[in-house]
Length: 116
Length: 110
Image 1 (cartoon, chains in turn purple, blue):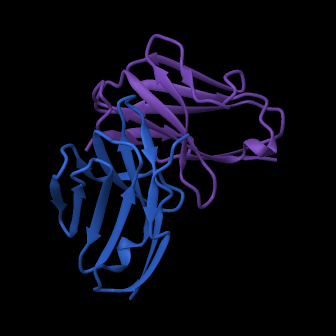
Image 2 (cartoon, helix red, strand yellow; image 1 turned 45 degrees about the horizontal axis):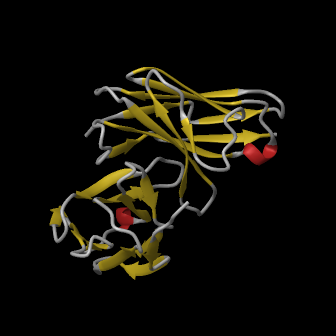
């Protein structure tokens, strides 16, 4: 199956710093990537849709200035958590689709962010 | 956002038993997907269903896309310890976004 690589897998940072998470589609081009957030023992919550060459679309309640998304190429999307605070600690997961209809999404392995 | 109703929330079974879990929605979906997530990992796609009524198998896993397009089930036969994990259903709507169920935590006792 398609491979989506997410890096880093785990990051610990101080409050107030910014953290960048990368999501790469390794064997296919993805015009659309998605970023999710998952709290312990809960489901995945869609944060934003990352579109190559255009601005990301954010879900209601997600601060776009807090979670900066850049989709600079067909194989790379980045999520930057700016001025991180302890409440931003969570598991962040990206996904990428081979097709425009997104009927088969493949997920990265996730990034566990811990903000001290 | 919208969520699917996934049940059961958790299951404790003995190795070798069969398992069934399902998802229902008030909305129609064009595609149903079933994922498995291990702790600290991203979800891994198990089965994708594209047509109402479709029944698809992947090894010991079988899933069906409900005829009303508002539900789906996943069956696991002859469970083994490595089946342990959280199983999520997900529906793909006309907005091309996935809506996830809340997950079913499966524990298999050897």
